[in-house]
Amino acid sequence: MNTTQLKGNWNEQKGKLMKKFAILTDNDMMFKEGKKDEMLGKLQIKLGKTKEEFQKIISEL
Image 1: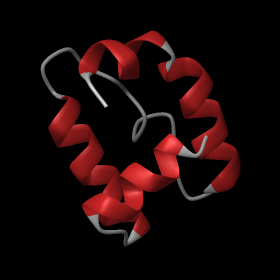
Image 2 (image 1 turned 90 degrees about the horizontal axis):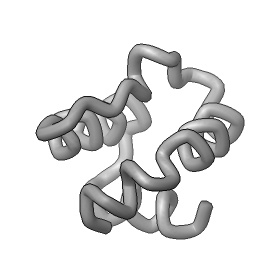
Image 3 (image 1 turned 135 degrees about the horizontal axis):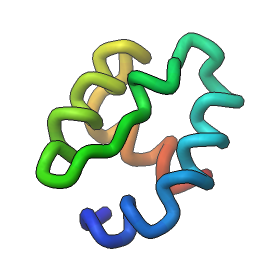
């Protein structure tokens, strides 16, 4: 997933992720330009998922 795809539909994906994982907060989901990998890494850690598992979750949304 590239930054344009993530940024383009992030609000929709954010809502689905927050619904699926109640532990996530608005602060966890803040998308900052140039910080995509950092944000995704933090989400992976918080959810206890590997990079591949987390990418699969996002692609299935």
